[in-house]
Length: 175
Ligand code: GDP
Ligand code: MG
Image (cartoon, rainbow, N blue to C red):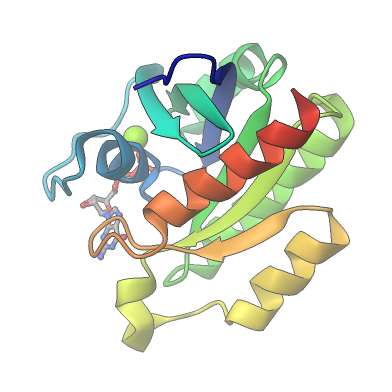
């Protein structure tokens, strides 16, 4: 909760990436602190809010969790245009989802909010034995595109809070 006199930052954040990469699971892990293994595919988009207390400010995230399916693609600009942060998610066990993630990044570079912070998230880090995308490959792509890179698991909670914390810290410098 906000402390008296503490700055409040309200910021829109969008989750983008292929269907099945774990966008909804990441949002639910952050917002509810749980992993729901039988997550239904998102239709259109879902909305969540969560508050993060940093020592310098309180960040209120308005999280837009988009559907990854191609048929909803035309809706995506509505969500990313005004976003202060964009998280592009892929699944480390599927190289196809990494290819899709790169396309999302290109789209954001050309049509997105130039001032937004962008994160490339390699999710499902718990599936290490099935890994198809090496960390160095993701990391390098992120670096080339001015994004920060993080490997997460919505299942084990690895780096989920850290991801939103990093974005919150970034907001302190731009708001
Ligand atoms: P979305 O379509 O990107 O929103 O993906 P969902 O959150 O619906 O997740 C798709 C599937 O992947 C579901 O069966 C989830 O339980 C599973 N999933 C999501 N995150 C993880 C993760 O970090 N590790 C593993 N092993 N499975 C995950
Ligand atoms: Mg979803």
